[in-house]
Amino acid sequence: MYKLRKQQTLGDVLEKMMSFPVLKIEITVPIEEAYGYYLAEDIVSDSDVPSFDRSPYDGFAVRSEDCMHADSQAPVILMVVDKIGAENICNLQIKQCEAVRIMTGAKIPDGCDAIIKIESTRVFEENGNSYIEIRKSLKPGQNISFQGEDLKQGEKLLCVGSRITTGAVALLATFGYSEIKVYKKPVVGIVATGSELLEITEKLQAGKIRNSNSYMIGAEVIKCGAIARHYGIAQDTKEEIKSVVSKMMNEVDLVITTGGVSVGDFDYVPEVFEELGAEVLCNKIDIRPGSVTTIAHVNERGGKILIGLSGNPSASFVGAVLFAAPLIKKMLGNRQPFLKQVRAVLRENINKIDPITKLVRGVIWEEDCKLHVKPTGLDKSGAVSSIAYATALIILPPQTTGYVVGDVVDILLLESVEGSENFGHTVCGI
Ligand code: AMP
Ligand code: MG
Image 1 (cartoon, protein in one colour):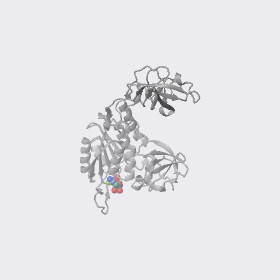
Image 2 (cartoon, protein in one colour):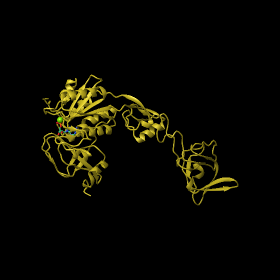
Image 3 (cartoon, helix red, strand yellow):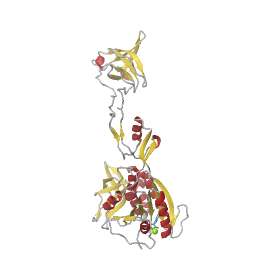
């Protein structure tokens, strides 16, 4: 039987785990596929945006000095001497009492310093010439999109480690990036260990359960932005587990197992990690659920990290979001790998007996501009219902006993507030 190590604090484990060297591989992707990757290069603007003074409206380019005193009592008449679309340039030098009909995005003609919208003018023809009447005054620079007002040349726009969002793609396209240097998405191998496990397509049998953990972890891997590769189910024999973990170590960037990390007679995972040359960092952490999460590191085979999650679904879930996710995000080049911690008002009493940190699966919602939270249900590490509705983990620190309605608690955000809709109308009591 494997002997549990000395209990370590969550903070210590995270710090040591995140100091493991991870391979971040730079690749180049076409802009069409760049969404969701993390930048491996800083993006600096190589020109002003806009790169010339331009019109934000369909209207007329004018000299403000001609219109400075225009009002309904003293309208100003200007002659329209040219007409330009967004793709054209006016080659004339605009003189006193002249105007140019201009479309949105076109360059401001020389001599003009203001734009008046079409709907603010009266357009008329006389003797074959076109004129506008203006009944309101204009100031220099009025209604002009100035060169560099959006972005200046030489500005750092996005840093290494920034996520490529929809808006970031627009920026990259603006500066002509058809290909972008990003970090490769790590391939994360997942195997479920346990002789009691059935494939999810199998019929339930007495004493057996379906393997839900592999798919849950796979979903978390995808959520982080990486690629999940499934290695099925390994029976509880040392040989079978060793063989599949060894194969995974050769084929994937990060190895995740579930089950078999505790002190049961068939819990071989930590032992297997060691026999495959890995150094076990921890297998007893001061949190519940997830205390038996086993994290190991091996220098061989290009340096690999192995994470042994508990088999209990809630514990496996907590281990996946607390330990596997930040490591995956680090491999992806994400500069903010940890769950966001915020505060919320507790809306249901919670009793706490354990002297260690408890992470209670909770559901969040917004009310009166504040976040509110309450547990999602059965608070046992084997529960699957409580994770299905969880949009946050409520942190109950060690040495605390209980919390009551109205207490402000720290929470780790798992999903956005909208995710709480899974929990139905019971959340807000509507
Ligand atoms: P273990 O960590 O192997 O001791 O398993 C603890 C509990 O989690 C047992 O009740 C298992 O049946 C259950 N379990 C183990 N692996 C899985 C899995 N892949 N999916 C769902 N439940 C599991
Ligand atoms: Mg087991």
